[in-house]
Image (cartoon, helix red, strand yellow):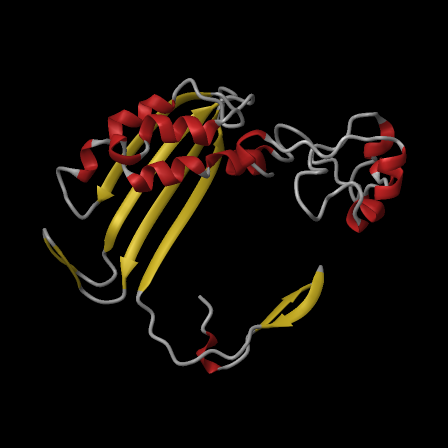
Length: 225
């Protein structure tokens, strides 16, 4: 955990310049929300994504159901989905071991089986909201569900598909455009990063206009990789 109250904090990385956070006024820690997603490849070739959300307070917290001690979770929700390598959801299980309203919040878990049949990269967030948004689900479990697509893509990188990073592989040996290009501002095919690391796929804006190339096509549902 970073503490800025003592002055500027240095961020150091071999890949980018050093930046300093500005001085911060004195402050008091109140709340921590932790979100973690673990990906597991199974012996049967399927994948499990296990997403967990935890909220804790730095001091005792009064709830309608009683006092929650400092450090004990106000929320702890776990959502596990099983997917294939095409991003299809084959199974889903949700549980809520820590909730503010026991016997009520934790009764919705079975409804998350409604995720089965969806595809993480095909309007997934829209379908999740339609099936489990608002009073149809738990806001925190539904929030966890909506961040599964990018986690799955990152988990598959280097395992299910090659990242085709120019620093490690001669991606120019075939005509397949690396999937990560035109998915974010840094890897625009008219940008300096692509010019440096993926020169074969680089084209300036002037070249694109001259060749009448179409603009980059966004992934459905706003998903980035």
